[in-house]
Image (cartoon, rainbow, N blue to C red; front, side, top):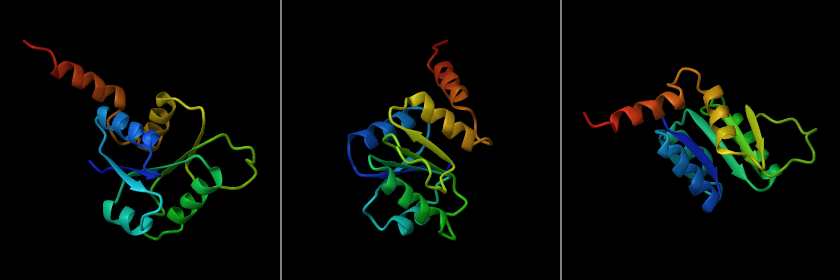
Length: 134
């Protein structure tokens, strides 16, 4: 299974999201927004990218860089940011989440953009069935 890349500052919210996705059986790779972003993402070759930023314009700029890449341009991108007061700016993101958003919101967008992968609730059911002792 390929990884989901989370791009953002290395703060607690990004770590919490990574832990949550990992707990649900997803492989996660965290990339600091200030690193050599495109080379790192190209090396990881993620199936989906989540861009987290408190500043909407920063998240959109990162998304635009990813979508202009010949290697990463077809990878779905979810932008997670604080509430956007100017929604007139076009964006290359495949989905947007504006604070406040829930874990269910993130999972719904991930599932919508990963249609060929086992649904998350099926993974949770499988995990529960493996915990049962005969």
